[in-house]
Length: 286
Ligand SMILES: C[S@@+](CC[C@H](N)C(=O)[O-])C[C@H]1O[C@@H](n2cnc3c(N)ncnc32)[C@H](O)[C@@H]1O
Image (tube, rainbow, N blue to C red; front, side, top):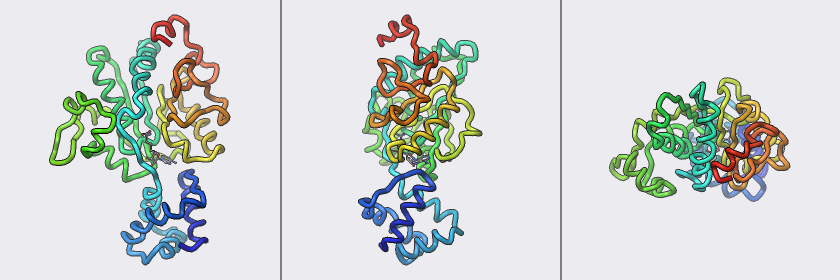
């Protein structure tokens, strides 16, 4: 790969998605983009760079972007955030939203859907407790390819063995050859949409809970800050933000502060959620 093409690919993906690829990523670029060049009948990476520079083929640009994303995800990833959702956030929402009985949850950068579906299964498990409530789960990602997979709800044996409790596999999945199909009742609980986190949130509405996990790590400080500020605007004043285990708001934005006693969950600074009433904190064992 020519150095100027490498620099061009890095700049293009940075501008399109925020993904920062350093000089040590030339092997990754080569191994991910060579199949894209082949699929589009381009002779190699220099021909791919030329075609992308001409900026005439939207599908090529989309395939280029998809190929450079890291889409690693699994059901109930890291376990604790989902336990906290069930035991801390959900009871809180059932109190604060008792009048509207409406809750909106956003799985931002949802990849192949496991995060959104994990939340849907938790809600389904609540049974009659949520009768009369509307829970809307929206999963978004920049990558077209992962969204198609999320929508289909079909997973490999390997994917259902990562993080998914066996009783949920039995209850909510049906084996179809060497794949597992997620039940329609769970799939119906989630809507998937293409959305670039570098864009404005207009059109997505306001959310009560945002899961934005394991994606900010790929961005530079400025981009992380800008994304978190936009999320802050799209979050209900007493809403909750989840970040991944290697991510934090500290030193990035002052719009959020950690929820005391609950690692990985953030609330808007000086909001009611951040200042948990002592009775509530005691009830959930915080
Ligand atoms: C490592 S996965 C994380 C999936 C899930 N949140 C989890 O924690 O398991 C990161 C996802 O972020 C998506 N992504 C990267 N840049 C993005 C952007 N600018 N806008 C929206 N999604 C993006 C990728 O396509 C990928 O699916």
